[in-house]
Image (spheres, rainbow, N blue to C red):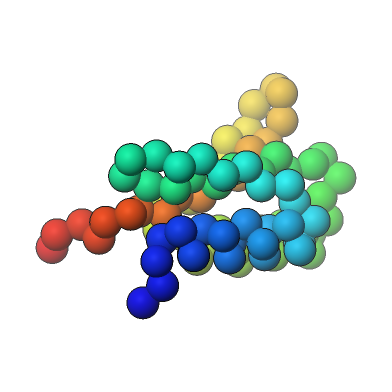
Length: 81
């Protein structure tokens, strides 16, 4: 099993390779990654973005007047079942 930090750095590298500029934030319980999605993003870029976000534990997309931001989170601890 990969560490959360390794998963986060891999996701950042893949987002960067896909043409996005990720921002990584380390929190107590998770590592958060955010990217601004340009208005000019192609359908292929969107498909790759959603494929990559799907590898995270949680993800979302915020859309407002100032733009679009995709967010991913990787939990540091696996929740108890």
